[in-house]
Length: 158
Image 1 (tube, rainbow, N blue to C red):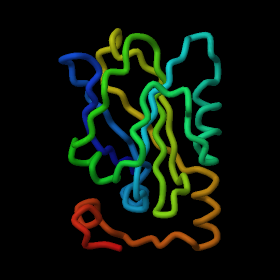
Image 2 (tube, rainbow, N blue to C red; image 1 turned 30 degrees about the vertical axis):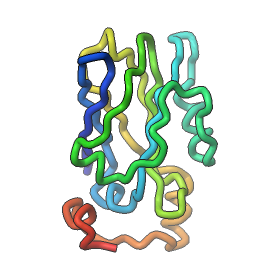
Image 3 (cartoon, rainbow, N blue to C red; image 1 turned 45 degrees about the vertical axis):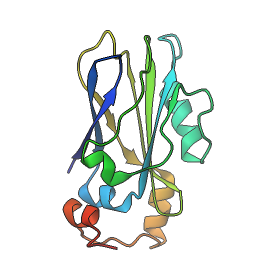
């Protein structure tokens, strides 16, 4: 089951880009305490850039060469479209998302390449489980609540 949390990002002086985070499930959304978005300048020649960037963020290394780093933003803020990013400028960017639990471990990550000035379609980052998530699930460290998104964001769930 896919669950998309919508938000908008500001990509130019007056343009607003539709932005979507696609979680693998509602449970994945509810387990994620915060999300951090990076926009990293790249070129078409940088083969495997997403793989390399995801390897860094999964172990907790911030992307120091990012043009944009939102810092940790509460996951529910993305649901309500309340997140705006400053202009990312022209050129190809790797948009990287990291969804973390309440202790800052990366549970879900995703990356997509886009030039927001030449491609008018929305930016979609599909999030997938990390090794940390799989290990925590196997070790029964994650409390699966069965909460809905609405209950999670209203504070009705743990």
